[in-house]
Length: 211
Image: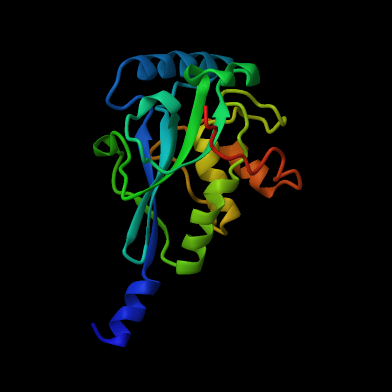
C-alpha cells in the first residue's frame, strides 16, 4: 500500500444512526411499549405513534464499533465494550444486575435486531475527528437512572437519550434528525437538552462496575 492509500485509510470514518422499532425481535418490550404509547397518546390527545430505539455504528480507519445501551444481563459476550453502567427504575435498584443497564462501544461488535431497522441508516458524519470524539465521549455518558427524569429535562432518560447526547456533544447537528415517518423516540429530547445544558457533566464519568 502506498503512503497516499495509507493516509486515506487512516482518515476514513463514518457515523451511522439506526432506528430500530422498539422491542424488535421480541414480544414483552414491544407490548409494554405499545401500552406506554397508548397512555401517552391519550394524555396528549393524539393518535398513538410507532416507537423507536436508536443505536449507532461507527467506523474509524479499519476499526468498526457498535454503540448502544442494553441491560447488563442481556448479552453473554464477555468482551462487549462496556464503558458505563447505570441503574434502572430507581438508583437503589442498580445494586442488582437485574436493574442495571450498560453502554457499549463494542469494537467489532454488532447491534442486536439490526435486521429489523427501519430503512437505511442515516450517515451523520464522515469526519474522522468528530468520529473519534464521539467514540471517546462514550466513557463520559452520564449514568442517569433509566426511565426517570432526575434532572427535570422533560423526558425520561433512556437509550435514545444516550445516543442523542453523544451525537450533540460530538458536534453533530440533530435539528432535522427524527425517527422515520410519524414515529417517536421517547428520551431523545432529554439527551439533547442535557448535552446543551451547563449541567452536562452532572454524574458524568462513571466507569463499569466490577460487581
